Picture (cartoon, rainbow, N blue to C red):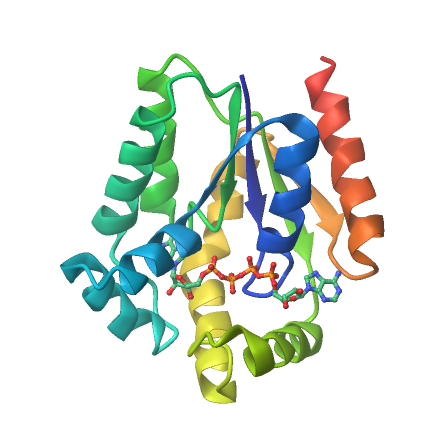
Length: 193
Ligand code: B4P
């Protein structure tokens, strides 16, 4: 199996690049942001709880997202690999993911970490906020809160995978195709090993 984590701050291009990568490598896309937004649109109790946190730019509790990923892994026994997008976002989520994958006899091959400056993140998210209807994108202070949450809780997830030598940094600024090419090159290097 090929199991990849696409990592980076909010607006770094995780969702954008995931769509292209799953097509090229035939992976199952697991985005906790998409799973949470689907719960919100179905107005489930979990979705209502998540919405109040997401609207403030805060992370949803670990046990909620870990439970969602557990169910998604169970629901896809035939997958030839997974692309994790927006997950794990805390060290506790990373440890839980390792355990869930170990139970399936597999593990993470690589974390691809995209670097993008804060001004560019802000520009991209505010631009998306004009059209996406996402309430966490159209307010500058909420975007700042999301970026702060990334620095205080999520950036350390890269340290967790760095101890296993699994992190590869990729430039996240440039055209979507240029970044896709750089990501593909790194994946091809592990996929042929
Ligand atoms: P996510 O859905 O993961 O949202 P994101 O980080 O904002 O998006 P992403 O990084 O994928 O966006 P992209 O750059 O592709 O999370 C939303 C919220 O859900 C979180 O704040 C949190 O509350 C909650 N949540 C999710 N997962 C969680 C977890 N594991 N634990 C706890 N809480 C969790 O796109 C941004 C824009 O940039 C787009 O408009 C795109 O077109 C544009 N863009 C992309 N690449 C570009 C490029 N190269 N040049 C110019 N523009 C580009």
